Amino acid sequence: MDIDWAETWKRYMQGLNRVKDVSFWDSRAARDNGNWKILSELTKKQLERIDVDFGCKVLEIGSGTGRLTIPLAKVAERVTVIEPSKEMLKLLKVNLKKHGLDNVSFICKRWEDVEIGADIDRHDIVIASLSLLMIDIRDALLKMDAAAKSFVYLFVPAESWMPFELQRIVFDNKAPFNLSDHIIIYNLLDGMGIKANISIINYKVEQGFNNLEELRSELMNMYNIPESKEEELENYINQHVDSKDDSVYYIRNKKVATIWWEKT
Image (cartoon, rainbow, N blue to C red; front, side):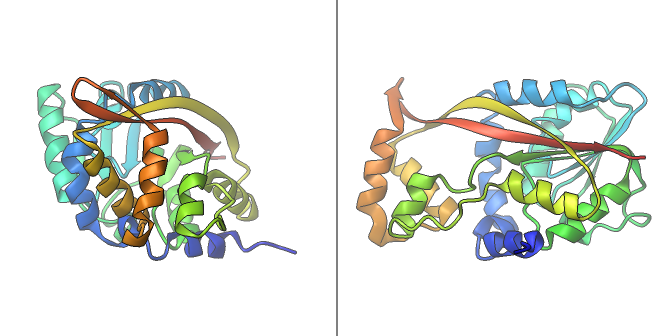
């Protein structure tokens, strides 16, 4: 039986706060800005995979506060960022100023609302790092391919968007999301006639929180976990945290897929 990968993706994305509500990302801007250090291993490995040099014009979709934007702008001639969160952009501009960079331009829109030729020109390289939160993913990918002159780089979770332990809590031991994002995206691209390359990045994250309650609130908001599952969630948290320096750390070993293709 053939799988409709675009429809599968749509089912996964619908109903998530972080997909539909830009205010979700506004509220996370300060925290994400403070997460650069814990994601330094991932950042280094991502940059090693992007073939960018001076003279390149880079389009970054979903820049956040600039974790990749800053190092890219230090090499590329020009970087254009697409970021729908005004709060993320505010912090990105502050970070660029700190690094003395003035070769970055900003478009505060969702990728779905950006028009090639009106809002942006084509760029040498298009990058989307952990930002494929578009419901109509086929159209989004086609636009990325059309916007690129040379390469497209996608960094996509190589694991379920919700940890399986949390899926079992939320869905009463019936974990419905057994396909990770990179499987869906790779197969969708193949069906679109784009023969992409793929490799896996392994990295460790120790995310700090002021206390367990802050972590609990973060997980409940991120994954829409109901209050009725609070006890099971507490058991999950206790198995995945470490305490030090008056903070608690949520520890995970994670995987991200690099999916890329060269324009011909």
